[in-house]
Amino acid sequence: ERPADLTVDKTGALWIVKSSYSFAGNFQNPNPYLGPSAILKYSRTGSYLGIQITDVVVPTAVAVDSKGRLLVSENGPNLQIRAYTNLNSNPSLDNSFFNGGTFGVQGGIYRGNPGEIQPNKFYFLSGVGSDDAGNLYVAEGGPFPRGDNPLRGFDLRAFNPQGNMEWNILSRIFVDIGELDPASDTDYYDKKTHYTLDYNNPNPGQGWKFLAHTVNPYKYPQDPRAGRPGAASDNESLENVWMRRVQGKLFMFVNSMAGDQGPMRIYRFDSSTDGYIAIPSVRAVAVSDGSNYPPYQPSQGKEYVWRDVNGNGQYDQNEFFLDPNPPEYIYKDGAWPDRDGNIWQSYRDRGIRRLACTGIDNVGNLIYSFTPREYYQKPAPFTDVHYVRYLPDSDTLFVAGWTTYNPTNTDQPSGIRTMGRYDNWRKGNTRPTWTSTPEQTKDLNNAAGWDIAGDYIFIIQNFDNHTVLVYSIHDGKLVTSWIPGSVIGPMNNCCGWVDIWDSGIRAYKRSNGEYVIFVEEDWHGKNIIYRWDGNPDSAVSVFSVSY
Picture 1 (cartoon, rainbow, N blue to C red):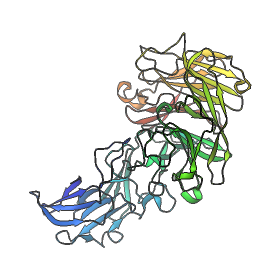
Picture 2 (picture 1 turned 90 degrees about the vertical axis):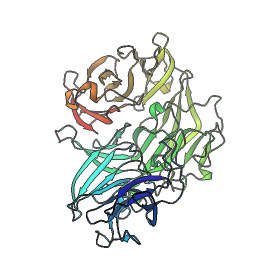
Picture 3 (picture 1 turned 90 degrees about the horizontal axis):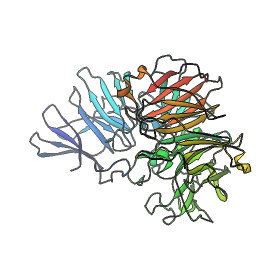
Picture 4 (picture 1 turned 120 degrees about the horizontal axis):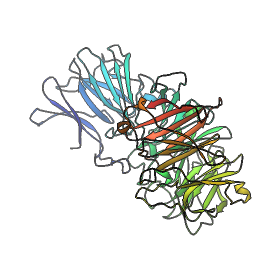
């Protein structure tokens, strides 16, 4: 019943994990909880021998070491490796195995400074093994709490018999795009992970460090990033991350591919209470879908903002705010946060709107107000507005979309068929300073994402050698372009799949004038990181390839 991992002990008996969860689910429809876990002993012919282990909350893997002990990886709240002896009668923890039968800090990365990665602090445990020399091998990876679908890559650690880590291999699979902290050019976040960059390391692929996980599924079980059963409904696709500083405080904005599946989820940080953990804070540009997630959401079809008024990171009944004057047409796609936390939306053929961030409450949440809400007609020459970017300092709006003379016409439409710049936008100007048509290749509209930093617009092309195109924000003209090059391997085997339309690229201008560009690449599960000095005649370098 619900079999998961298994191993064979020195007598030939089978030890089989009875999982708490069905393996029929996927990341959008989490696997339902079906009952308590257990580890059961069977004969080699398949007969149950009446012996079981029931004190492991979420066992994910089993193995037998050279001393005949049964090793179990526990992906429950303890997040430890457990070793059992007396396997023929009444299995019990072996007190001679490290700390009274367990290995690793109890509570894993959520003990001490929550989220911080340390050799003996585990997270998302998915595998365990041992060799004849007594070395211990621990695998981590997969969404909480099942470990059956390694969406977040793997972390394999080897420990000697004394418990010291000998080596560590990481496969940090990126199926999404992150962004740098606006106040730091070395702190990079994706939806679940915090990395640091080392610009002094000249070796491609080695200029980054896995610093912390930012999800705590035990303290915040309703966080859609946790992947827990019941934590996410069908529209909880999460790939896109933007980092913003509002009144000096750090916030993480998360939504889906092209912002077209669900609301903008906003997280706050408080190192004094939660270390590196991103705390669920606000859910904006949200339309109730009639499901049971989030709980207490308004009736179906209503637009709302959820704000964590009491600061517990959970959805409570009095925390949902409705638009008092809902528009006739509600659209939840194409959302993007500007520098000050205001959320802009492309309303396709109906124009553009802006949801204002009006401050920060006493808990630390951003406050969003439906009144007044700004609506704008789509500016000429656009017939369909797909994406917008706004620069508050200069009151400049950049628009990407379709026009009469440059519509979409393929099965994989790009929203960046035409770009336009509009100065003094909120003062009422709707005349473009310039419009530009990004280069397309073959028969694909393959401008797959864009971003703006400093004096440039950066566009990533899909499928065609992963080309980055760089345009001037001043006149919309192409300045330079590049492809990754052989440093990442053969081009046709190592790159070419940008899955996040609109936002599969991020650009950042450092204080020294250098640009750092991050590009999503799903074909081999990585982000490619470039460095460029901003001179159109200068070569670009692949700073790091983060697998």
